[in-house]
Length: 42
Image 1 (cartoon, rainbow, N blue to C red):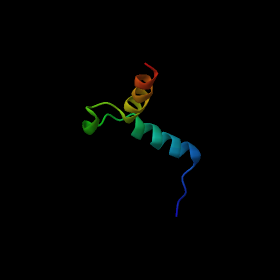
Image 2: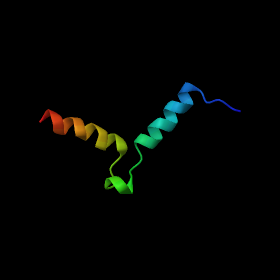
Image 3: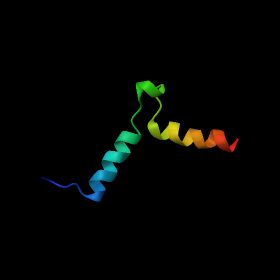
Image 4: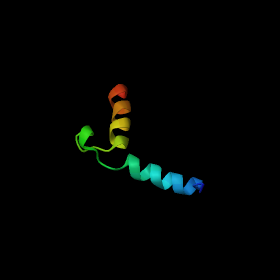
């Protein structure tokens, strides 16, 4: 089995977290996650 390096995992994670999702109203998971913190701080 081929193991992935930490750098390869970071690249995959970044691509997944910054890809717009239809189920999120075409926002990225990262945008939705950080917006939840902004809402609590207000």
